[in-house]
Amino acid sequence: FTSFLTICVHTILYQRTIYPRESFLTTRAYDFPVAQSRHPKVCRWISDAVAAVEAQMLRANDKTGEAGGWVEKIVLVIFSEESEVMERYVFDVSKLPRVPGKEIETRFIREQAPVGGSSKAPQRGQPHFIPPSQLEVDLAEQLRASLSQMSNLNSRLAPLPKNCTFSLAIELSDPADPPVGHPRPWIPVDPRLQRCVDEGNRNESTEEKTGLGKAAVDAHSKKTTPVRKVDAGEMIFEMWIEEAKAKLD
Image 1 (cartoon, rainbow, N blue to C red):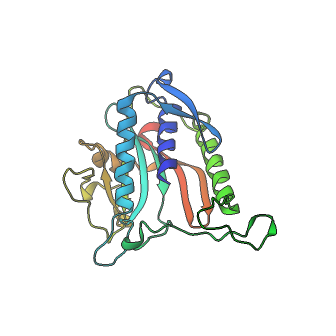
Image 2: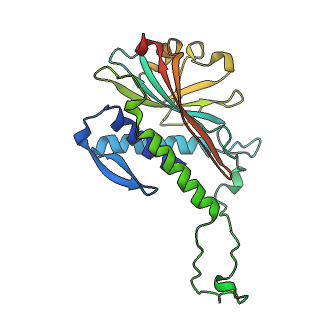
């Protein structure tokens, strides 16, 4: 999932022209052409931010033995030059499986019938090619379709003002403890300024100065654009875009 999230962040920054389009190159992911920033500092920021998201999603809870860090949503937020929220790109990951902390590194084993209908199993040490399962093929197709939707953002969204910035945030479920540690990758948002206070969620932002807090109060979406739901085995998540009142008014 985090590889897909990284690709989406690069795609959004390209499609919404947060950085000049000349600073991106074209590559391929899931057999689909995608944009990737060429600027080392941008790439490093995205890599570090997604790594912090992954660490929080895999964070084990010592009391319950569960992992996942109770992350319910991952949000890429685009701000105006005045730190007003313009757009929110929401990845709802609340349905992804939570794995016990001690089993995070456990590898899945998929049984495979011998090639050619032979009942003879390969000898120990022999390489045995296992073709992709139908589930893997289906997942790749759904991720490819999602990227196709993301690559047409400009035809579906109102233009952004100039000099916009962005940040990555996570929304935690009510029982979750705020991320701690040093250095702190996440900066808690004032609970009174949460966008979803009525839902009991907590927001965390990677920005040192979180305009996300104050702006979140005024960021109730005036328009929501669905992107796609991915549903392949245990990989279930949904994506949509929220355009704020401040942008459309």
